[in-house]
Length: 285
Image (cartoon, rainbow, N blue to C red; front, side, top):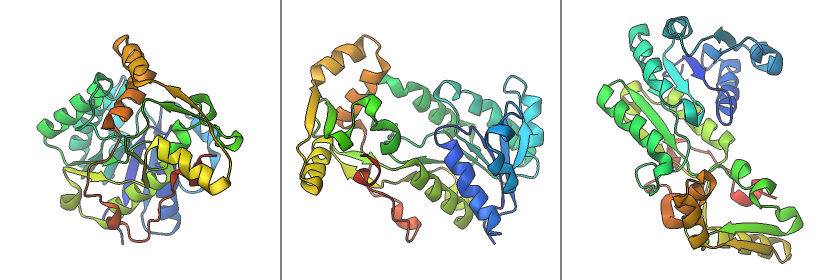
């Protein structure tokens, strides 16, 4: 039987949907008993009917009314959050109710590049909320996994390797950690059900599926396919200028180019034997 058997997840977007799927797999296998899915509306049952046919339990919440959180958390071991970047402060309200409800552990909204070595102000909201959690004193855990390649390296971002085109923001020689959302969700679900609350509390799990620079990515693709990639380069100075002007997109890529995208070692990959996460070129094409 798993260490933790009942869960509720707040936030079912970019990575939350993958966490829901992995938890439901564990429920289907009998490893856990409960997967509650918190949503502002029951419309989610229409957009994701498979979640509820597989045993997910819908709980409707109002993020402006803390009293609606308690029913969602009653009888739950772990609260998992995967909130929108603009809603990070809501975690404070959620964890206070989690304490009242007798929840054992709270998973914070991270799932990205390491906040503690990042260099730009774009990450201030996450840095501040992480500091608050340390001061609040409730058992929490987080997953630091680098960038999501299938989400970030898209045609809209200038990555179209199928047509041998790529956009490199900055110099392109800084190592970046990459983990797909599915692999990050698999890792999280594994440790939550195999480690005790004391082993998880206050822990920042550092994982990566790949560690590769943009320039190495281009070279690896060329070697693999024999195609010459047409590379468009955005100078670091241009990124810095736009970042200073408040452009969020430029802040992000500048931060990665300055070394803020690599997960600090040692990694925790080996906590999930047989994890085998995908490499960047497995998912970007």
